[in-house]
Structures are given as C-alpha cells and as structure tokens.
Image 1: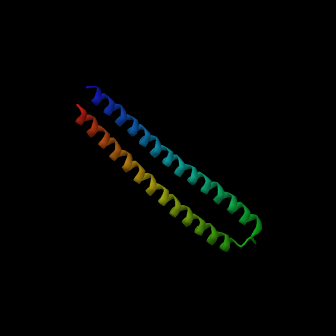
Image 2: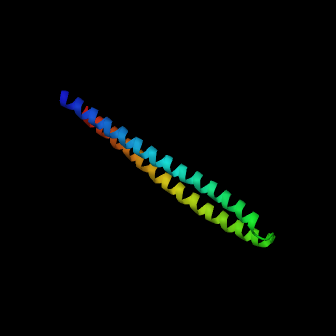
Image 3: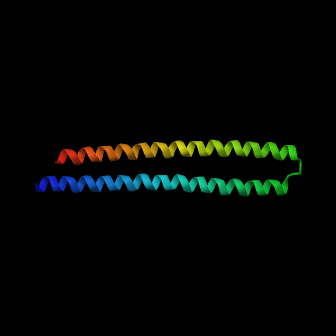
Length: 102
C-alpha cells in the first residue's frame, strides 16, 4: 500500500512538473508574439518617419510586414497547438497511470 502511495506521489509530482513546463513554454511563445508585435510597430513607425511619403511604397512595405506578421503568428499558433496536444497526451497518460495504481 505504501509503495502505491509513493508511486502516486511521484507520478503526481512528475505530472505537475510537466504541466508547469508546458505552461512556461506557452508563456514564452506569447512573450515572443508580444515582442514581435512591439518591434514590428516600432519598425513601421521608424520607416514612416524616414521614408519618402510614397503611398505605393508604404503600402507595399506594410503589406510585406503584414504577411510576415501573419506567418509568424501562424507559426506560434502551430507551436501552441503542439504544446496543447502534448498537454492533453500528458493528461491522458497521467489518468491512465492513476487508474493502473488502483
């Protein structure tokens, strides 16, 4: 009985450690998204202040920046989905392991 209790405690510790790891990774992705968006805004402000006011050139640049932003966000969403899939698999494994201890 004590052995099963120790196994359960160890299992729970590992589970919560892994959950915290996934959460930290998701937070890091969000921080990178925010930093990217801040840097993009700063860059565009600088470009608008330095560049001759050709609306066509500004529009092309803005469009390219938008495409870059969309590609970046798509990649961060993909990474977040992968982390969420791993977290779901972790939950499933944890529940299965708990049931096997009974």
